[in-house]
Length: 384
Image 1 (cartoon, one colour):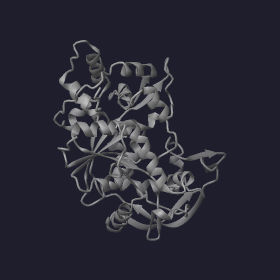
Image 2 (cartoon, helix red, strand yellow):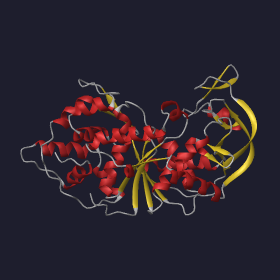
Image 3 (cartoon, one colour):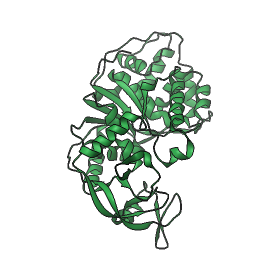
Image 4 (cartoon, one colour):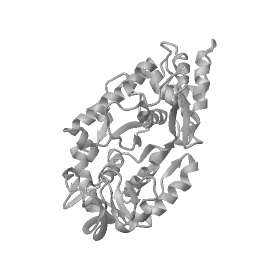
């Protein structure tokens, strides 16, 4: 496909590769794939190879990178090249992060009271621990007057440490689609900008791959600049993110906005699509089994979009609708290349209703498809 929109890049938040993942984990990459094709922009899939979870799974992080390449290739029925998938262990990226941490004025050294556990999965400013317990995003629990880590079970210890923190100065706000999430994103940014953000880890000392000078950088901070790094040669980066991961996306944007020059960031927030087993048991199916059940990469790509309803943060899709996708395909149907769309029009094309009309049109004996359906057909690369 010709990339006519070379000043914009589409990416996802970095994903952590796992063995035999359920196919539902690939909805964000699939959505980004379709959006990039509608915009005629380059797609960059990002992989997180930093942190304890990776260290526990792979002796060599490169194995995790190849694992994700191979899994994504199943959807495209072709081998994914290295330039298509970028991870945070790239030598160029490490140099970029060191440069940014040394040049961004809002990154400050300080002494602070920190609460954390020895496994390192729970660590924050001590003053925030009480409020964190009430959040669904936290690893901290409170029982019998004791704060402890949900992961390792250890009691949190308090210590005064030399830290690296962010004192936000930017007031920038990203473009948000659908618009219904704009207020929520602004409120998240106001919360984060109303306090300092801890960038370093002091309790978890073994992660030397994220070290900048004397500080060990929080792995979630380390990968946050990855979308900016891959988009450093374009004007705009479109980040496709599932609604449950919106908080992580906004935290990443908090760092991006402090850069100089800061890139223009556009969020496309898709719902979490849950699978409801009905005749066809699909929920939680390992990726390879799902591809086999779909019968072709085209059907495997197409089916999840039947659950795409932009007006909901969580939607559901019946497994039995896989039959509809499978029996709407006609072999060797040529694709008509369409012009690029503005981002504001993408949601009108990429949704369940448009896809159902496309499938109905292809199944009819007249084989009639609307202009909007032709855009969607190319976006999903449905050369039936």
